[in-house]
Every structure is written in structure tokens, then in C-alpha cells.
Length: 233
Image 1 (cartoon, one colour):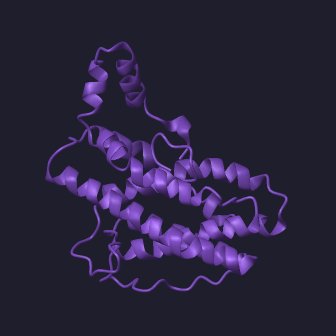
Image 2 (cartoon, rainbow, N blue to C red):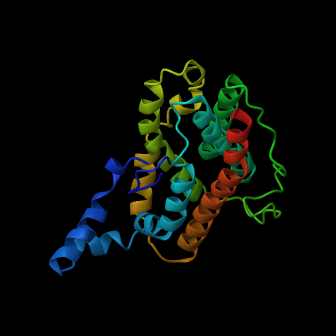
């Protein structure tokens, strides 16, 4: 979940004040200077330009009830598939290390649930998120952070739901949901994005790569969710 969403990937309580300012401006008919300034930032553009991809992904994962073993397994299978494809095209650094930690946690939980997590086709360093086409470059770390750190905000809501489960199988598979975000992860990222312009070559690349990450998760949801549900039926 990313800014302004309440689906399985972001907690809507984190919706930013810039969005509120824009709605107020629309209600009064007068543009608030704060809303105009917000629209000039990369943070605002990311939120707006990836909204459709984000909402579509949330809808695909909406039936993954993490308080049940089948629902949790389906959710984790999607995460593991997407993260395995994402890790090789993340630039070295904190982002890549966190992606690898998330992948390891998801795979450990899947094993605890008795779900086989095969390596997705094409996870070598020459494979990208773009339908298995050889990657021309590494993804923009800002784009990856926006999707990954944003999803961990929604994860706090899912963790509360999971922690209340009475399903013993689900209870033993909480590593992924319990993994902490790196210090100052989302807050630091949004501060950087709020100081960056919404337009230009660099901004366009960040938007393109963020959409690619969402598309990667979307393909994983289509491929793995139904497969896991069938296996657990």
C-alpha cells in the first residue's frame, strides 16, 4: 500500500497533508499555495501517477486474509515471487539489502506453512521486472523504496490482524510481517521526495521504475495467488 490507500499494500492514516490541502482547495474554489507547492514535488507526482497501479494491486490482494494459513500463504507467495525478481535489479545498498531480508523472511514463512517456493523463472542479474526482458539498467532506488517502504506502512495493519489469529499454522509464519523497516525508512524517503522536483528526466525515470515495480507485483499476484489457494484447498 502506498500513500492514501487502505488496501493490503498502506495504512490510510498515513495520507499526507498535501493531499488534504488539495481537497480543501477544491472545496473552496481557491487554490491553496501549499497544494500548489506540493504538486511541484516528486512525492506528489509518485502518488498521483502510480495510483491506478497501486489500487489495482491492492484489489488483487484484497482476499488474502493473513489471519488464515491459506490467505497468509497466498500473500507470502506473491511477495516472494516479486521480491525474487526485484532483488537482482536493485542497486547495491540499503534498498537491496532490505529487499533480500524481506525475501528471506517470506521464504522462511512459506516453508513453515508447508508451501514450496520455487525460484521464479529468470532471477539472474540479467533479468528485469519488465516481462523477463534483459534489464538495460538497475531500477531507480527511489522508485523501489517508494513501493517497498510504502508497503511496510500497510504491513503494520496486517501485522495486527495476523497477531490476533487463532490459526496455529498462521501463527508460526510471522517473520515477514514482523520484519522492521530500516530506521527512518519511509519518513526519510518522503522528506527526500518532497524536496525533489516533479518534472525532468530523473523524475520521469523514477515514475517509470515505480510503475515497473507495481507491474512486477501484479504479475506475481496473478501467477502465485491462485496457485497457492488451489494447493491448499
